[in-house]
Length: 188
Figure 1: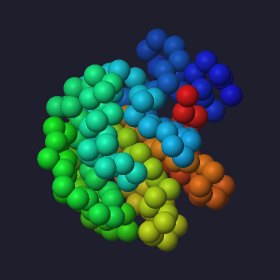
Figure 2 (figure 1 turned 90 degrees about the vertical axis):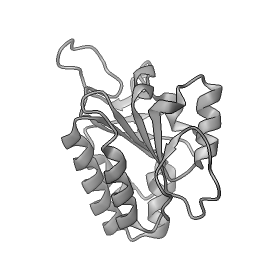
Figure 3 (figure 1 turned 90 degrees about the horizontal axis):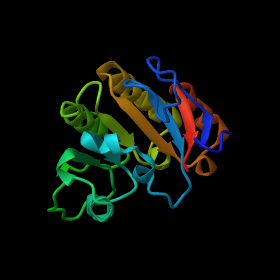
Figure 4 (figure 1 turned 180 degrees about the horizontal axis):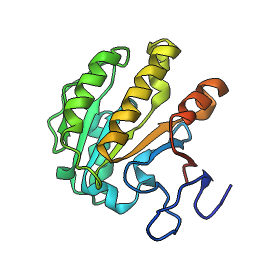
């Protein structure tokens, strides 16, 4: 592992040939995260210019508090809440209607609508906890859903970052997720 970049394997920016942590636009990255991590903290500054978060782990209010504390512009961040019980949220982040983690069709619909607000070439999509879906749906369904999600993001030409706690899922599932991505990194 390259300690300076925190990479397990990486990609290069074709124009400058310099190490780019999450690769050029369209790159899909699997990000290994510890259980208590806030994966958005690992993103580069430019990601916050146009960011969509599919939040299976944190409530939008928690995400907003953390982003505000870090001095981020909340107007440029959207959230698709994928949580068992949404509760009230009346904050500054743009949010889609919440959807339950076992409703992969509903997640896909909310995500597709929200992806329309992400700009090609400069936008970012982050799925904060893929492993949560495995608690609610069968592995093959989750893999098919993930493949569809990754392909939509790749075709749109935006960077995708998909977070997973490798210790919370089987090695086989991790490899299935990894095989659909262009790069993988360990969260710093």
